[in-house]
Length: 146
Image 1 (cartoon, helix red, strand yellow):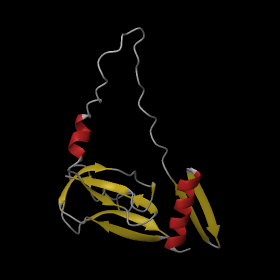
Image 2 (cartoon, one colour; image 1 turned 120 degrees about the vertical axis):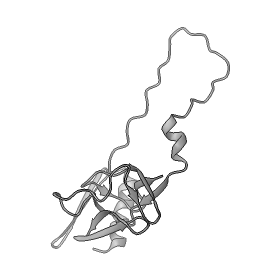
Image 3 (cartoon, helix red, strand yellow; image 1 turned 60 degrees about the vertical axis):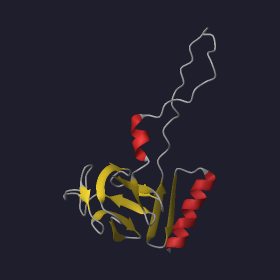
């Protein structure tokens, strides 16, 4: 199965709102999964209160205000995300780790090939956006760097 075929399967998942898809072709088996989005935040409406002046947009949480300057490392392919080279090994990076351009930050396994993903810029890991062993999609954010 070629990478374009896997991308097509991912597109079918998005268009059909599927959360998982498994395809077998000979000895090759491909399983794609995506996390369900978190539920929308609950809105509390107080009963009997008179409406006030025009509604003001809610203030952005402090974390969101600072996310604008973060740089992202995205997955170059569909595959399984691994934080280390083996289950017994330490992760390549953790939140707070300093990385330099070219450093290995994770592995994405695609079609039984382990592909090292390198940082494309210097920075400090602010967030790890994928879970170890999770299927990631092409273009999905894996890390955010400060």
